[in-house]
Image (cartoon, rainbow, N blue to C red; front, side, top):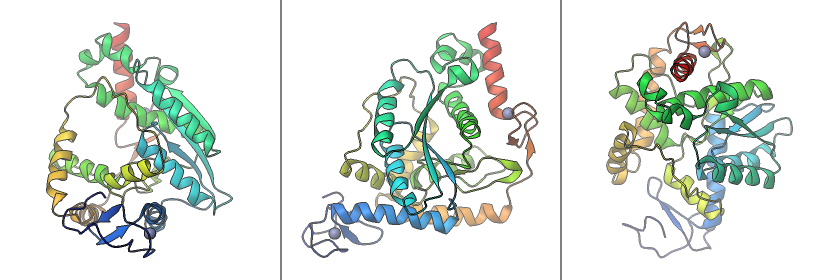
Length: 316
Ligand SMILES: [Zn+2]
Ligand SMILES: [Zn+2]
């Protein structure tokens, strides 16, 4: 039983009153058997979608799948929910960043899992979209010349790649597997960096014709997604990214894990309180990037600028 801690492992599942519990949800006091836990995950995603109006009945939903457990769990749960919405469509999309020896295992997992759910799968690569892969940008020294970490290039350009993929597939929304933990980490990082205009993460916003990005796991703790993946037999990726380094995000993650260990509601209350503040402050004006035509707070968006600077450095 996970999180036995202060609880006597005895007793039956709070939901069905029959089966043996496998999980103690500390912030609600519920003990759940495997089956009730999995259906509670689907219910929560359904409630999250309706609470924040994340998806519409006729959306064409691009699910960003990295091939990791979080994104495959999201794909599975959305496929169960969308059964009730015959006008909605799901597409699984993987972005191949061009990291040598890293993406192939995950890509295979993503493709076979998608096809087992009957969801069309498509992959797009940095090489095809931007003219270079991540390994190329790093090994050639171009990233260093531009003064950016591999993770920054990857994050910014993957975002752009997903928008291009969405436009090509005619998707009306991009769904990502960011969890409650990820959203809170992002807010805290933005605060620490002194970001002036913090935008809500994973909420549907369509200003300026942007393809909205939604995070149906925004109210689901990371550990519960991991348990769901485990119980569903979703494969865990074994190869780690060669460019992983200790980032500020890792430190923020450790702090939040430590802080919430004895205060299980902490992440929920941070998210709720923080979003009340930023919503009141407004999101700030938007314009359109002169190069890609996507909404941006700058004349040339960050992704286009980064892409160009790397390409210039590769040419030099
Ligand atoms: Zn049960
Ligand atoms: Zn742009």
